[in-house]
Structures are given as structure tokens and as C-alpha cells.
Length: 524
Image (cartoon, rainbow, N blue to C red; front, side):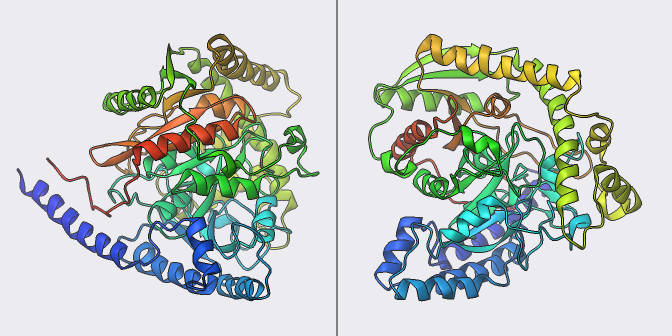
């Protein structure tokens, strides 16, 4: 072995020892929402104590130690909120499962408080939203302690075709805690890293295509991408109205379901939420049974650009599903996905221009830009700090698009629906009487490279994303110590069934392994 290899291994060992020591020293590592509530009810824990513990851990291992840069900003009001939740509990008022639970949210989710909402861009520092996003209203009403904001791929990875995922001009580069020289994937990079590294109990991310489920897979956690309209989009810095959604990121399926319970609500100011069916009960209420027994699952193998080593994970997943009593139908590959990708980009460019112009125009005093054109000019004028690694070619392409009434947009949207829904998910589900479609969620983490950009290792997120349908990523295995998840995808509004299937798989496999903060993947 050459000296460089030995140095990498030694650095990895040092980081692992330091990381494991930090993990062992953290009293609340891997704590669940229900654990929090039991301990608080028993008087063994308070919201203030837990919030302080997470703030100290963020300082110790996110800003110091391994320096993952998952948290872009802590909430200066977090301890005050926690004390108020404790006072309410003493007075006999417990708002629900998230009462007193510290939660981190992605920095493209608007808060009208002391924190910023910047989508990771320095240009939005000081540009205050006039009101909380709908999901923030729901979290506050549920009694959650909003601990802070998480870093992300700037503008939710929709600025350049050659980005560096997990990097933003405001937050710097988020690092993968399983191997710090590896990428956390994006765009909900910070939310995923914060959850897996025990910087919070749960987090909220957003997805347009892969931005929840891909970093969830890459960081060994559960990620839920709801049906578009299940969760209000109001107050999210937009990419595309037809695909944008917020969703839970957690260490267990049950915690993700409990967060989805809170986020789910109709919103008179988001018409898509009016399409959601009226459903009673909690998403977490049906997670105990053997959901896989008798289930019919279609396995879709590509083409997703996944590396060959993920085939071993997929085969292990299929073995487990069959052992649990599921019937697996091999769907092979779906070549038409390439057409969907091309049409999707056209849709996103059109919808991004329309959505971002509306969002920027809505901001209060302090905003330096009010249109996409002004944002492009700002980046160009401050290129050294805004664009040190990659440009803004996506911004420029979007600015050239016309209104959503143009035939090119309508044709692209029709193509997306036909390929993802009519000839894809809906056709497979009907023909084979499927409960869900199973894929490998994403490839293992790649090396972060600010010079050449992402060396993407593939993802199967696009079918559900383009369709606007739900998907759930759950840890499934590892490649060279790097997590890989399995993705359960279904028809619109099928979150309840997908979560039950994912929970049964999670219970049988226990595939999640907390990170050890290796500097790099050790050589064999």
C-alpha cells in the first residue's frame, strides 16, 4: 500500500474514534419521538434539556469535530420555545406527538421569525418572508421546537447542470458522516445528515425529484416524498409546482409517519391539497402488522444509472421480501424513462421561472432581488463568492422560457404524465395488481469534487417525482460501508400502504447503522 493509502486509513481511524466517542457521549443518540414523549411524561426529560443537548451537539460535531456543516443556522428562540412547551406540559396541555420535540427544517422553507430563509444563497440573506410556510405553521401548532435550518444544495440543486450537491454559498459544503470526503447527495443534504448524525430527533426536507429520498438513501435514514398535494407547498422556495413537496426525514419509519401526520393538512391557499382524499386516523397507526405478507410488489431494475454493486443490495432486498411472504413480479427496465427526463427538464424550467418570480415578488423589505432576471444579474455581479465552483446555466435557460400557456410547456407536461403515470406506474399497478413498486433508491455516496462537480451514482426517484406520486426510502444495505436504501413507490395518496410496507421491511432487516465519521472509506 502506498503512503497516501496509509495516511487515508490513519485519518479514517482517527475520525472514527473521535466520531464514535462523540456518539457514545451523546445521551440521546437514536432517540425516537415516542421515546421523547415517554421520558417527558415520566419527568425524566424536558424539552429545554433536550434542545440544549442538541444545540451543544451541533456545536461539537457539526461546526467542530467532523465539521459536517449540516446546520446552516440555529434558531435563537429555540430554548425559549422549549421552555414554553415545558410550561404547557406542566399545565396539562400536550399538543401531540411532536410536543417539545426538536426539529430541523430545510433552509428553503419560509419562517417569519429571527431566522433567515435563503435556499442557501447569500443573495436572500435579509430578504424576510412575510409569513411562515404552511408546514412551519403545522409544526408550531403541533408543539415542535424548531431547532434551526439545515444546509442544502443551493437553490435546491436547480442552478447548474454541473453542481456540487450539498454546497451553498451561505452554508458551504455539507459532508457525509459515513465518510467525510463523500457527498451527502441533495438537495436536502443538511436535513439528511442532521438526522443520521443525531443533531435532531427528526427533520423536514423538500423534494422536486430525489431531494428527499436520495439523501435519505445515501445517509442511511428514512425519507418520505408525499403525493403532491398531501402537504401544502405554500412558503416553499419553489422549483416546480407540479412536483414540489415537503416531507419527513427520520431514523425510523414510525417517526417519519408521525411527522407526516403533522404536515398533512388541506390549505385553502394551495389548491393541490384540496385533491387529497379525506382520511381518518394516523399514518403511524397501521405500522405494526406484517404488511409484506401477501403483498404483490413489482421490482423495476432501471435504467437508473446505478453502479453494479447495488445489484447485490437489490438481490438481498428481494430475498427478504420473498421470505416475508411477498410475491415479487419482475418488471425489468423501462427505457421510456429517458423521454420523461427530457420532458421533465422542460417542465421544471418553465415552472421555475413562474414560481420563483412569484416567490421573490412576495418577499418583504430587505429583498435585493425580485425576479429571476435580477437573481441572474446578482450572481454575475458577485461571481467570486456566489459561483466559485459552478455556474448558473439552469437559471439562464429558465429565464428564456415564456409563460405556462405556451404549447411547448403543455406538450412536455403531457409527456411527463403519459410516461410516468399512464404507461408507467398506473399501467404496472393495474396489470400486475401491485401494492407497490420496488427499486434501489440511489447509489452509494460519491466523492465530493468541487472541480468537476457531482459524480452522480444514480437514482430511481424520477418516476414518482414526475408523476407527483408518493415514495418512501428506507435503509436496505451498504456498499463498502456506505448506505443504500430501497424505495417503495405507489399510486397517488398511497402513503399509508407504502409506510406499512417500509415499516415491515425495516423491522425485519434493521439495516440502519449510525455513522462513525470516517475521514474516508477504509481500504480493504
